[in-house]
Figure (cartoon, rainbow, N blue to C red):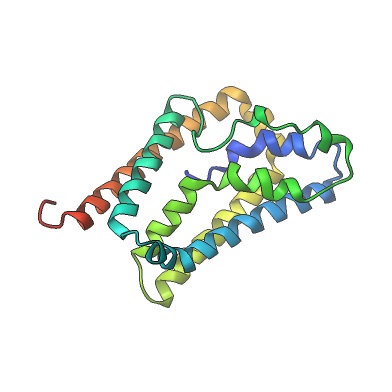
Amino acid sequence: MVLINPFSALTLFLDSTRGYSMNNRRKVARVACLTIFITISFFTLAGETLLKVLGISIGSFQLAGGILVFLIALNMMNGDGNPVKPDQENFDVDHLQGAPPTMAAAVVPIAIPMMIGPGGISTVIIYSSQVSGILQISAILIAGLFISLFCYLALMAAGRISRLLGDTGLNIMSRIMGMLLAAVAIEIIVNGLRTLFPDLI
């Protein structure tokens, strides 16, 4: 949840849907969150197979993914945002505001990469590679469903959240999530080292 972080996309969502009716804004939020759930589900079910096809060991991917997530956490704690997600200022949303409602922005850039990017995808693959059996895989999919629903609620409340917290509040929340994310990253790195060097750790 702290890695996907829907709050990072609130400003972009508001800018992209400016002038939209409430019904069209709901459609954009639904498509974005459905995209997140489909992405989580795909990499949960096929992530480990992709690693095998590419000849990448689980331990190596855990270590690389953990380092990536830790770098993201450091940037979040420093207030620099997510280094593997684009700056919202780089997106030109002026053409969206005067154009007919479109769902394209819901997929890119709102869902991918603003809410779920390389860090989130690698984390899903790492967790899914550590489980076996239908029940455990289902648990990850259910977690992905709840995360998607939470993202939908956050997007629909984007205006209220932005007014309530302001830039300072969103910045503080990002730093707190960065701290939690750093702890997750350390766990992933330790598990990767334990997999690669079982006799040392």
